[in-house]
Amino acid sequence: MPDSPVLYERDGRLARITLNRPEALNAIDSAIPTLLQGAVERANDDPAARVIVLSGRGKAFCAGYDLNAYA
Image (cartoon, rainbow, N blue to C red; front, side, top):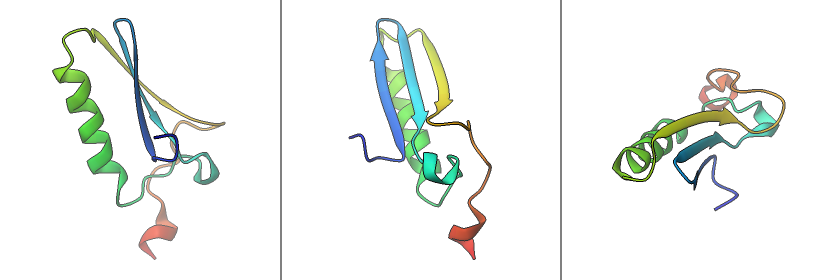
């Protein structure tokens, strides 16, 4: 699901969770906390995953909360 604001993929023992809103510098909107929780739970439930890496797509990891979404 490449259009999702939170992506999950596993490569061997590595579970990668990526914030996927580069146009907003990966700022957190109202959907991301629930999606992020689901991705972490998915990694925790995966017996093959040993490491979780959280990253942001694009030039920023995360700009904090998206204040425009709450205005």
